[in-house]
Length: 242
Image (cartoon, rainbow, N blue to C red; front, top):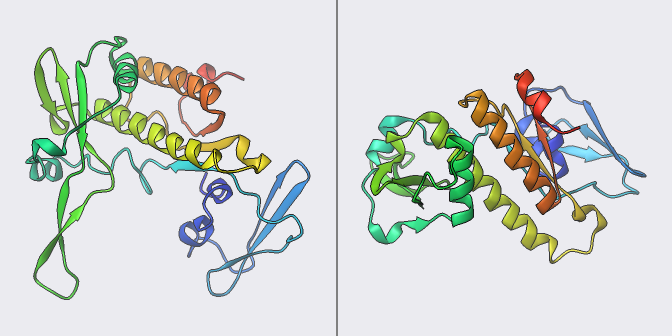
């Protein structure tokens, strides 16, 4: 999965394989008549030794659950409690179509959530070489759920509910970025984008997982994205369309 992310992230090999592979390690990509062969150098840089074709590059995203995650970034309860205070003006409504999709995936009821709002918490981070702290704006949001007039913050929801909400919001955010970039490109490689989701089943019961797979299948068609999923679940493998 991490190797494949090189197809849309120019820094992937350098970041993700700093010490995991030896010097002179080679990785090859082939797409239609195009070929790339990337070799690792001494200084942790990588060189494409087949230069005539240029770099094979798509638009895409990687959601790697535990190591380079977005789903689990703020699931620590003490962290979420610490940042539960926020200003009302910071809240934004999640689009209604996403709210319906999340309700359908989690509860098999598109109308389960009256509203889902999100905000970006501010964390205290110690300044290096100092005893002082600075405020750092998070790069992923937390959520406020409304069910039958009652509002629930992120730390009051189950891990599965938070994971699905975070994943759906993240994927759609990335797809909107890709859509914008595609509108400015004439490159044929950019007609189809790539999405990689690692350990898709983590934190979800089988029924919700099946509905999530159905949702992702619809996204593939509407957004012209090819999704690659890794899983330990045989049910997921059976659900994915061949």
